Image (tube, rainbow, N blue to C red; front, side):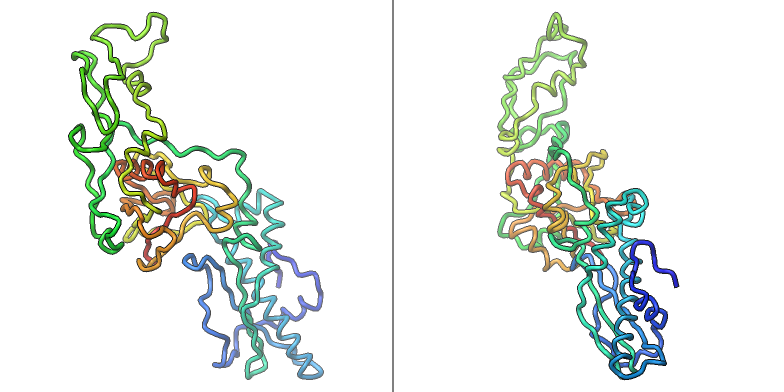
Length: 372
């Protein structure tokens, strides 16, 4: 039997023993009932290997030793198969990365060889069963440490959409998570400047008289100094659309965005239940315009390797990562092989504004609720 290229066993004795590996004949007294495969909630990959000793073993000690080697070889083979199928992002599996990056192939092979033995038993029929595990994330011997590479630069998070008001959450810091999930965030009615903290109104029509005095949130529109109809912005300026001129003048600073924040949120919970979200190592959160508001390029890669970009949780009582006052939003779709949650723009605006204030995104305080 030929072992996968991702993992080679140099010792001839181990290869010979592996030929006797079989899943048949394992007695009822098998090893502990570990969950096999990829467990995204626990961030581990677990496999079970089984093996029989050759019939010509000279004594029991030799038989048990050869059965153990066969079981371990079987576990390494299975681990390689499972690891190959893990999605790094929506378009790339580990196996695909191995075909293009030799250094990643070497590191992944070493990670598999370093799999931790959780349990090993000699069963009543003389066979051996071994359970092995590799962490998906972690600073030591994790799959993430093998496949992720340093960002040359960390990209800033995008600006909120200036033309659409952020959603307003109908809960306060004392509201339990279960109640937050039941509350649908309603966006502020567009252009209603009476609502505290909303964004600028729709860009004015240049054919109409200029604004005199109008404020939205903490922004004073007197500072815009919008010219009268037909008046040029600058005699020597290059042609720029009226809308672009307005946007350039109302672009807020980080401090101004932070002043619009309302919740002092400790993290983000994205409710993806009912959307068949498929976990990946490097997810992206987008808005409905296709803007990426959260991705690995915005983050410290060492933090991603250590803890992963998000927790995938099916139990709403297990969202500790997002802290005790999480901002909760509902994904309306998932894209790219069902791997990337999509938010409506009012919700993505609220996420970006609150992140300006409390910086929960660069700290990876993100949880995805999904149907496991």
